Image (cartoon, rainbow, N blue to C red):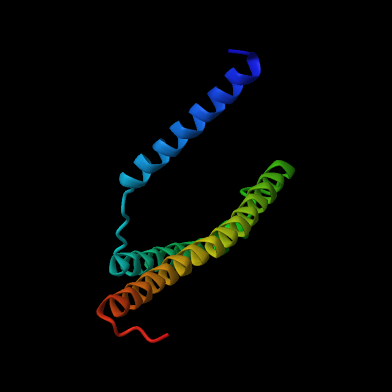
Length: 132
């Protein structure tokens, strides 16, 4: 068999193996089950955690950002300024984390609602009550 014929035979064989593999993959497809109530509960728990963290950060914001120098010398003043700057950076980072946290909790709650609505639509379709 020539080089071109071998290449065509190989390509044909690879294609038929790929099709066979594809059918086997379809036969072994897994299903996913979502539990919207658990997702909604998790979103509520996440919101509770965020509230606790926000309260702790608010309580610590004043004492950490307005740090007084330990003594009247330059080193103490520089250390207080440095620690105050770190505290302000921390407050900025924690605000960004809170935005991410809120976005994540909202996405989780929205997903729970979407799964609930999809399940209701599927149940209506299966029972024949689905209106087009």
